Image (cartoon, one colour):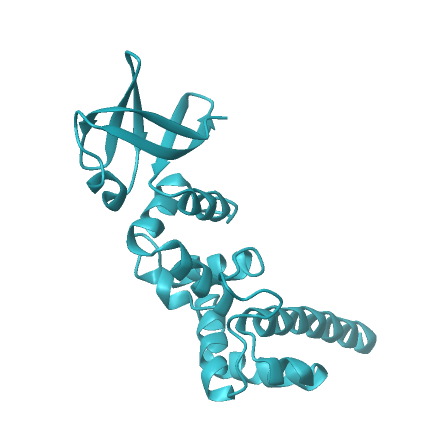
Length: 214
C-alpha cells in the first residue's frame, strides 16, 4: 500500500501529475484543486490511494489525507468507481460530502458530472452512517425538529430511487407511525432507512395477505 508520495514535481497536466522519486517518475491522477497546488521543479507531497485492477495499477493523489479517506469511502458505493469518486471530490470539499451523505442531500451529488438522481440516491443510502460531519460527536449533525426541513429531503431521496412523491410521502408517514421518535430526531438518513425497511415489511405483509386469500 502506497500511503503518500514525496518528491520533485516533474510534470503537471490537466488530470494528473508526475512525481520524481529519486529518478523514478510516478504518475498520479488528481483533482484540479490538488494539481493547482503543485509546481514543476519544486517538492510536492500527495496522499495516495492505489487502485488495483487485473490489467493496471493506478494511483490517485490528494493534497490532504482527509480527501483520501473520503475517496476510499466513496468507492464502497456500488457503481461508483475511482474516476467518479474523484469527480465528487473535484466538486465538493470532504466536509461538504460528509454533510450531504449524513443529511440525505442527494441533490448535492447530482451537481457532479456523471451522477444522476438514481446514483445520487444510492450514494446517500449506502453512505448513511459511514460519513459523519466533523465536530458532532454523539449527535447526528442533520438532526432537526422541523418536519418542513427533513421531510422534503427524504421525499427527494425516495423519488430518486423510483417512488412517486405521493407514495414516498405516504410511506414516510406510515413508517413514522411505528417509530414516532424518529420524527422528533429528524435525522434524514435514519428516517430514509426506516421508511425503506417499512416498505419491505409492508410488501411482505401484502404478500402474506394475498397468499391467505388464495
